[in-house]
Image 1 (cartoon, rainbow, N blue to C red):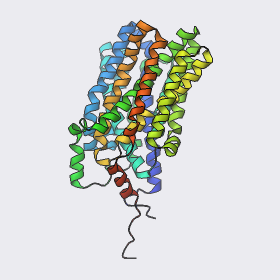
Image 2: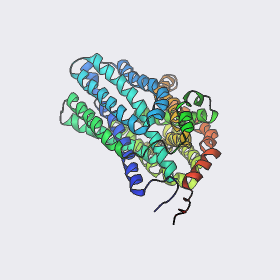
Image 3: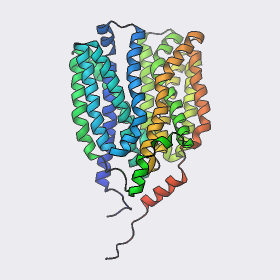
Image 4: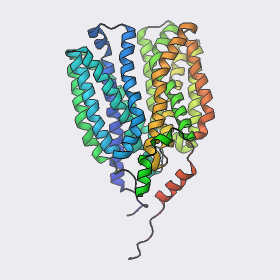
Length: 414
């Protein structure tokens, strides 16, 4: 049965959705694997805290180098081929980290730069395919795909803890995950839907050549600022919640870790439930609700007098931080012609929140204390309310969706 012009068959779409979830999870697994063994890497290389920061900076710089190039690359080769290529590069980066740990520290550093670069390309490629599925199915899916990424990071962290407890060598652990990612991802992406969605030759040329102009598109820049605000909020939570809980409430490291776990759980659940929220409130309404929730959570966490208020604040903080980044990517991908270039720009701007936000909070905390410094995040979330209109679908995207989902004309031969 034909369900609409250019619509994929239901089994193909279901398979593509599942494979996209898995690819997001593999990306999370790859990133969390090496991070879970960072204490052993620090000990092996005799690094102080500042030197560990430089290692993390190598990873971030690799991502920043890749992201401006990722959009045009994905537009040219398509998400399936792009993810296949960069999965091999991710495997090579992790393999270099594993080998460098055992043999030569500079190789480990090179591996981190390669891993960051490959991850930047992967982020854009899989997000473009996820947005294409949203367009074809006509409902919000991006938050749930990002929940898959969160599940992958949790799985990677838990696996790392298990490998550490069992005293499995770092190189063996990271090398095995590198092999898994490099072999499993190309098989998984075979179930991606064909890309691009049907376009005229002129539209394909426009898509490939739109990268430079996209940086001057006001709506795309605003969506990048939305991504930046929520990336700053999520990154600050990931890096500072456990330390702030210990500092503010004079509790143990174990309790601080539980506060961080509560935050991660809320991020994952918020993303999994995100499509239901978007269906009920629309993208702008969902973004406003998320920003208000995060603002309240940060304020409660930073000023609440009791430990239980800290945990409640961490849960609200995580739930609110969960939706902004995926919703900005969904909005940037509304029009298939420009999706790859716009996702590249939005991700590039948003990535700055993950890279620059936590160090800036740390620098401010040296002057004010950690809890007061975190109130800057609440102010950022309050300011992001003014940007919520940017995630509304454009008229061109609405027409494109209507044309895509319109019933097919009857076959004149029947």
